[in-house]
Image 1 (cartoon, rainbow, N blue to C red):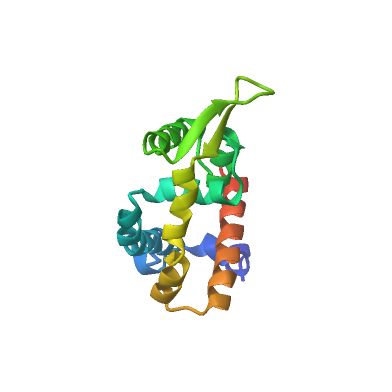
Image 2 (cartoon, rainbow, N blue to C red):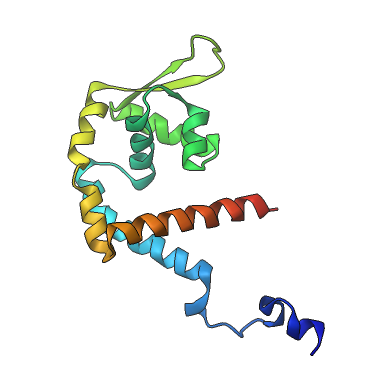
Length: 158
C-alpha cells in the first residue's frame, strides 16, 4: 500500500471523481438558496431584504451596537454593512449616531418603528422550522455544526 492509498482519502480524488450532488459547497449553496425562497414571502410582508432582517435581529438582541460590531456578528465588511444600515435608517427603523466616547465610531439605535417591527416576525421561526422538515433538536444540532464549519473555514481561509 502506498502512502497515497493509506493517506487522506481526499488526496486520492481527481477532478470529476465526485458528482456535483456530493459537493459539500454545493449542498450549502443550494440549501442557502432554498432557505431564501422560504424567507422571501415572510420578508416581503415586512419590507426587508434578508441581510436587513439579519441586522434587525442583531439589533433586537442588543440595541445600540457599533457598526463594526454588527458587521462582525453578520460576518460582513463595513463597506457592505454601512449601506445596509443607511437603508434601514431611510426606512425609519434605526438611527445612526456618532459614539459619545469615540466620534469616529457610529452607533446604531432602533427607533420605535424598528422595535415594533419585531412583533411582525414572531412566526418566522415556526415557519422556517416547519419548512425544514426537521425537529427542533435536529435544527439546533445542524446550526451548531454549520457554525463550526464556517468558523473552521474562516480560520483556514487564505
